[in-house]
Image 1: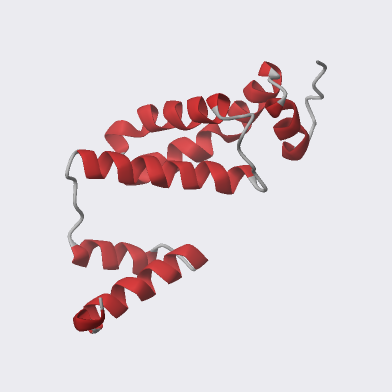
Image 2: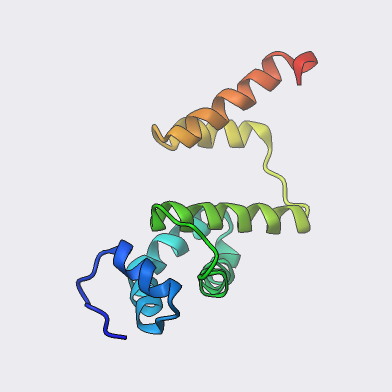
Length: 128
């Protein structure tokens, strides 16, 4: 299969679903830094492992996953892998540190929802 080097991510995703390794490589080259940086922010010592796993899972599940936005999908995969590692290794972040980080991480909708949920739980512990 021919792959256009300037193809958009949607075209690359379609080609990936068909098993096109060049499309996979193009997606990897386009997004590996985004994935690595997201992993590094959370678990620096495991950022490479997380990056490898996220892209491996993308290839292994290519025929069955429905992706609207590849960047969002990859970042959600990083988040899930980080949680999985943190749970397995019993890594916990003190709530004060977490709240500080959430306060200073920008105005991301996901961060706002998480911040509100945490605030509500600690403001009304009987409702949790």
